[in-house]
Structures are given as structure tokens and as C-alpha cells.
Length: 275
Image (spheres, rainbow, N blue to C red):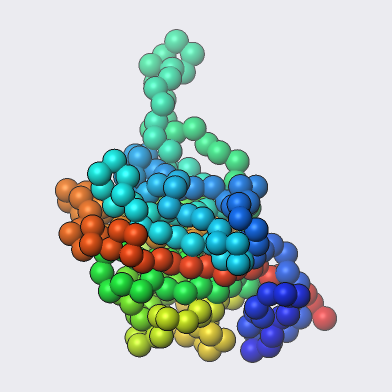
């Protein structure tokens, strides 16, 4: 690995080669850059009540901070994204001419940033409490599941998912959507990571697949479910329980409202430059 230095900011750790920074957010200042990020509020055509647009703030020291808070009587947190999945927005009733027919998808939105291949890196400090919510740094295709071919319609790429303090679950490459046609490839994962300090999570995506890194050390490679279509970035948290049968937050989440944070220092995207 090699260092990439950005003045007055923490270094990136990159695989060997020549790299060019093509997109980044250092989270400087006190206001979230809404030209780069939007809040994910819905999922699979329904408003997802685990998510809020109020549980994120910039701390003025170059970090974006995710909190867990109470909203309408229940614990919530936030997800940020640079693009949109075509199945997420709820359907708004309309007609096709005079016919009462329509696709079962909501209004489409223009993506803020999508990218194909490159090195994707996030430096963050994981949540501190052992239960109640989880954090992630990942990517998704806007049209995942619209075909059976991941090259055409893309893949979910889980670069970092932390469901328990100090534990990074295996990195995933899901394709085929989120139903009967879903397939999964996975690799790596670590336990015992010091959650009190910042760590770097990265992914090299090229035509051969995906190679994952934690603090500059390779943590596995996936050569299946390779996407050859641009995808968008998410940094996210979610209160546990909402995805269960009854879509209700877990008890532990109430106990940590206002008591925990997930902190992101930067997100950067690099393209490899041929010598």
C-alpha cells in the first residue's frame, strides 16, 4: 500500500499504482454538502421509519457525525447516499393517459454521483455501544435486480458493515435484487477491531472483481457478481429491529438514544491512471 496525502487532512492508504482523486468529501465546515449527499428515507417502495433526515451533523472539525435520536416516539438514525435505487421511492397514484395503469415504482430521481471501477475509501470511527444500531459504508446500483446480469444492472457492494462493536462482518457482493433471484458472494471480515479509534475501509473495484482492505491490509477478494455499471455510495446507520416481521425497533435502541455516535472523517474515490 502507499499513502495519498491531501493537505491538512488525514492520508489515504491506496494499493500500489498511480491514482487520481476524482471525488471526495472531507466534511469540512458545519453544513452537509447537499450537492453531494441526499438522505435515504424510503426502501423498496415504502417510507422506512428507521431513517431520519435530522440525525446527521458536521462537527466543524472535519467529520460528519451520525446520531441516534427519538423522532415521533421511536429511535431513528440516518443514511446518506449519492444516488438512488429505482425501487425505493413510494408509488404516487397516476394514470397512463386515461388508463388506470402504472408501473409499481415511484418517481425516479437524478443521481448526484455514480462511478464505475476505482478505489473507494472511508475513514471512520465505529459506533461504541454493543447493541441497538449498526453502521455501514457501501455501494449500490440504481437498477440492481432489473436483470439477472450483474454486469448490466449491478451489485450491492458492502465495503464495511458493523453490527457489533469491533466486529466487521464479511464483505458482500449481492446481485439479482432483493427477492427470489438474489445471489451473494462474500469474503473476509474481522473481530476485535479497536472501536475507539478511526479506521480506513477500502475497496478496489476493477474488471476482475473486488478487493477489500482494512487499514491498508487486504481482507479478501470477490471475483463473482462483478458489476460493470456505475454505482452510488452510501454511508449509513440503522436502528436494529425495523427489518423484522413487525418492523419495530429493538429494546436496546431506546437505551442508547443520545448516547452513541458513528463518525466519518472522509469518503474518497480514486481512479487508476495508466503509466
